[in-house]
Image 1 (cartoon, rainbow, N blue to C red):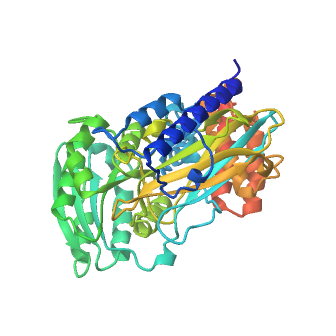
Image 2 (cartoon, one colour):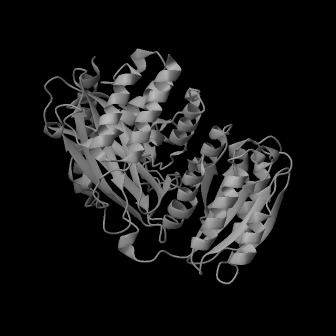
Image 3 (tube, rainbow, N blue to C red):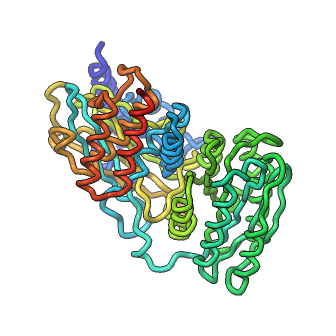
Length: 509
């Protein structure tokens, strides 16, 4: 039986089951309720029901629905990390190809500005669009989520930031501790008077060198502490993170955004070196007090996997910086501007219509996949997102020949950062809304495709069978597309993308 025939059969069985359930409900006089999702207004079979019922949060009907749900769903936790792309650029600038294991396509895609419509308040807008590729019946479908801008909601709440600074021997390399010190000094002058900072250092042991301190009237003291930081012995990252969270809880401020900022090359070599073990030691602080983690990676030799897992499972995200300009942007612009949170435990679920879609593949998000039935289980961890962010997910979608009609519905679910109340928003895509080709799509869509193609090529190597549909085989052709787009968008970040692709092309020769 072909995949689409299997989908149709399952859809029919599910419809019959649903019809029987409606008859039983009518006879018992019961009724149903909706959470207000746009997706609830159309038939997208397989979307899981909200958790309720048994002690484990599920009901017998839910268990039956999960068994009957067709394979037309894709569910993942939101991710705004960009470290993988920036670290790849650093490797290429140093004359080497990045290790394929460090290439995460979603972080390449999310490194570029998008033009999605923004919502007025907390939460997300949902944009779903797509374009057909040169490969027959294959399209790229983009799911774009955007949060409000920071300027439209007035002043942010005060911040209580605990900086956990790696002062191990490896941080003595130029572009590591010195970069962090310079950036922290500038940021100290730019934070508001009602903000607070604490500083924890770690090498073989961890030490709180500055307890939580208000900026107002104390900037000179903070500058002195930063300037006196010096490198010492080995890297006990686990002790640093644990002491950092303890310090953050001791200085916890109600009504403020409490965050731990970890600055490290993540080359842990003593104490706990496993991300899961480290996170377990601070689980109480994370869950009870809602302290989030912001990871800043530095250094030519960088423990990418450890830092990425700490951030993904520690309710935060990561960036990577390799020079003074990038560090100033992160510490002095991005961190202060995005201290606030607009959504907690945010997840997305895309339901592809089995009448029109034969198969699909999510590009990246390998470490962020969520079981479909856990989409509305708010106990399952999602992603934390602040104002001014966009999140993009790209899918390779194979439609049935001549398919017309509804193609997909994308739904994002999140918790209010203050009340923890759940909310949802959805967007739809019809087959006739697909652009005829990638070159006919908007410039920002094309940038998304080029970034995904680049990441895919770095991961796949010479295995063309694993390439995304419509991918240019030579790096040179991909670089030409990026060059043309940098002119069309007048975006320096897209110009840097073209340069990175050209560097990769030279490394492959």
